[in-house]
Image (cartoon, each protein chain N blue to C red):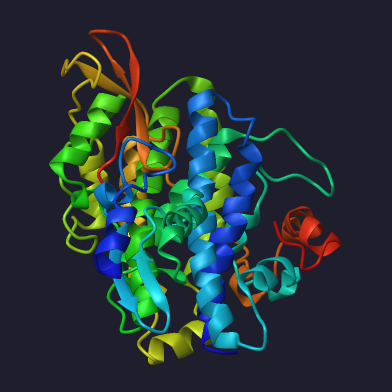
Length: 259
Length: 170
């Protein structure tokens, strides 16, 4: 465990969700959303790059943003389990399903609501590098939050079909948010050093923000209960390896290749 | 002319690769230009959005523009203070409008001084009032939060029926 692990946690969240959402590129439900989701990914991958660059500097020994993104395996990733899930509800075994935009929107909303609060606090930490990244990411995350909030309300307060799918997505995803409030050793160390936010202190604000939105969308807030996932500790669902395999294959087939 | 003055004059001609009617200066992307006897011309730029794919192009354009000086050119990136559309001058906004992009209709203030997230969500229900850059009508509506790039939203004019990009306050 090192100080840069907290940066990797933040970076991995952004990269994995950025990669996941980029699956909609060229397949969006409508043209405007195809573009919106691609722009959303662009912001997230940009945030990940800034964080990986900072972490690589701290790690030294030839580490680069690319080595951190492309040459670490799933166990080394410290992202929240929520961001690695496919764009559809629970399935058994290797079964696959069509992407469901309600899952995409609900996940983006739950995550953006958290990160807007996190970046807001991190913009004031003593570490100037992290504070600068946070101030920049906060502006972007607010637009992501606005976008996903808007669609959550449209779905929930829309047709019977859209409301059902939004509710199913909420029921499926909200239990994964329990993981947000777990404290990892690297977070505890970073908090002690004054260079992290204690995410547990954000739970009330987050719950209020999310509950209000769910209420506005005329949906029911499900209970966050059941198994507590451990992605931020490095224990992931089966979905992360597949995502990384696709994302990392080119870099691994042509190591040290440059444009 | 001093090297610094010459560098600044050459830089003032470099345009934004995405929006070629405005210069990097207009956009507030160039934060500092200094000349050092040993290292040459040092240009500090700041990214607009963190994932903006134009940043590499911007670096290359700056190096190319300063080539005639015959001295080394270093371009470095600085994140703080975070880029904001508040740095766009009136002349730049007018150029955007003429080009067909509605400029930001309000100022943001600093990132941390902005309303808290809870308030932002409540404010978000209010869509910015934007005048159509084509016909000037204030009867416009937002079609999508994100347009052709992350920095723009897609609007539609209800008077002339034309779609247009709106440069979001950021």
